[in-house]
Image 1 (tube, rainbow, N blue to C red):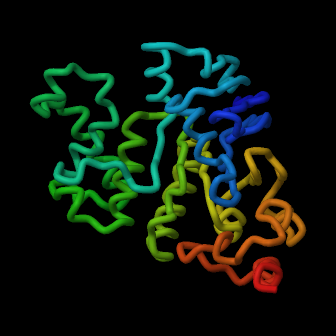
Image 2 (tube, rainbow, N blue to C red; image 1 turned 180 degrees about the horizontal axis):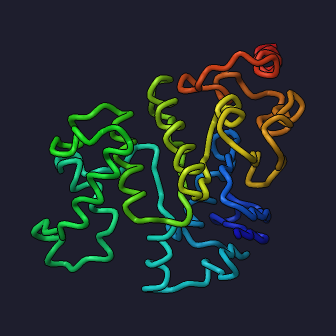
Length: 272
């Protein structure tokens, strides 16, 4: 159970996130959509405790994770894995070691310094890579992989943490459409097969419709839409992106194409 209540983040006099509240009562795939600067990334960073909230609560199974300090906050970060747009891998390190770094905070400094890992951890990492279809890449440097492969390594690193929740901050924004589909298919499979909640920031309506159980639209830090994918009408798109939004803002080159009438209507609106 995730309960978000009145979460606000101020940067000076500007409200990057403004009184955001919603509840998720199951392991759903939740998409957060909106223009750049809508507050999507700031919200995820607060959930992962990379950024402090100015006010409000984020409760997971009844515990306010915004109130956690020190070791408890770090423990929460291991339960709430973060996947970034730019992968955040160690480029010159091999793929398997990058995945194992998902559990660095559970191992000693000595193990980290000398890259010493228990056999069980290594087998688990290789098993996750195999599940994601990239086991053969394990000995290669991360920098030698394609963008789509690197993002799957980042997902494998997140799974190594065995998290309750996976947060994905624009996970396909740097990818071509084919790799974007592979990454989104992977996240959806994890959501369905593992029963893990996935919350993903997305730019594109078609991606949200295809993969999400629920969609939250943000504009200027506030929630302006909260509903199911089939409720993403042209009017809703106008509310989320603004009547003056360009089509490229809402449907970037990394979108996963669909051929729905609603997408065509939205394109006509944005291009008019």
